Image 1: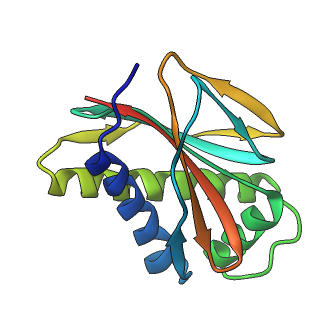
Image 2 (image 1 turned 120 degrees about the vertical axis):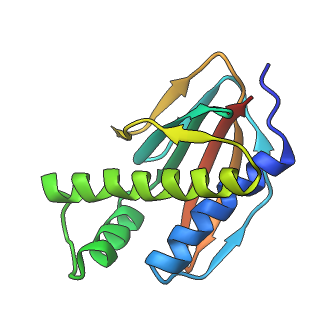
Length: 153
């Protein structure tokens, strides 16, 4: 079983909040974390970014299509009604933004990390790993993003 320390969870949430507030202009609050099994059930879409280096594991951001369209609309600077290839590319870039912001937060803790290219999952499903996840709901304005974290040293 992987041990996810409070400082690691806080670093990821710091990175996610930096992107949501600083880049997207959203107001953010964090819900109560819960421990999951070695799998997570995702909502309609999710982006997964792997962490390598002193911290290893996965960060999965799970959300519904309306939240995705709002994020992509803000990133593109115009209203997006449907997600096309440009929208999926923007969503992958959102994953990169969050991963890079998390690396910066880990660097502040004197931990060297890097990210893997983002992987997008579309549709409801279960993602499995040999480690347990901690799931944290993040409320951005009236939108919910669930951060599933499976990290260890």
